[in-house]
Amino acid sequence: MESWKEFDQNPITHSVAHHLVAIADLLDEFGYARVSDVARLLGITRGSVSVTLKNLKQRGLVVEDEQRHLGLSDEGAEIAEAIRFRKRTMVRLFAEVFGVEAKQAEIDACKIEHLISAETTDRVKGFLRFCESGDGEALFDAYARYRDRAQDATK
Amino acid sequence: MSAHEHHLKRLNELFAEELEAGIRYLHLATSVKGLDRLVVTKTLLEGMQETFEHAQTIAERINQMGGVPSLDLKLQLPPQKISGAEAIRTALAFEQAALDAYREFCDEIKDDVALEEFIREQVGVESQHVAELTLLLEE
Picture 1 (cartoon, each protein chain N blue to C red):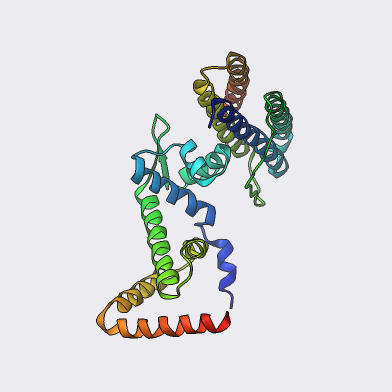
Picture 2: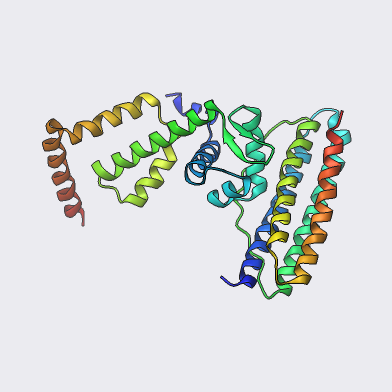
């Protein structure tokens, strides 16, 4: 019952998660990331990005070279990858299994990507694999039919 | 997007940078605890005043160019106790970001001498501000 209090104490806040993932995405796509790139990607001011990055640099999650290009430390990269993995997994669960519209699935996954535990994410991943397997396919199809019938009934 | 529209977009981004910096200065000035308050609060409130004046100057420029100042701030400032030095370091982070934004915009302007001159002046003012904050952090 007390676990809700942990949300406020999570060192990886929603904002921190977005900054780390933005840097990882920019590095993947362009090979570099600057404060201006992160600001445009997240739709916030450069000042806001700089203040957040100041804290992330102090925590050893983000590094900056002499040309002011941003990078992730090993720990920062690990956290960013874990968040991206959780988001991908939750998007698949919501969209492919529950039939949530793709955009809404992205939004809802974004809300929990930095909060859900690695253990639960692994279980969800296992469930998705089960759905794709021979054993799970029939169950998944039965659920999809039930879901669609229920949706039709509520219309 | 025409060059004129692009310039207005950039000016609105600078308007947001300056206004947000002003709010951050006020938050920092009221968050500093201990004896540091005696030394740092006045500097931070002066910074607030200056950045709001810069925001007003930018907004006037947007109006003169036929645009409308617009603002889309996503700002969360959680409660914090902060030392004077840390407050100055935070101020330096967002002032440096604003200076970089002015410099980048200055490099982009090719066809508007008056606007380029206006932004160049802002670069001078911001550079001085960053230098002053940097001096405060020297041992």
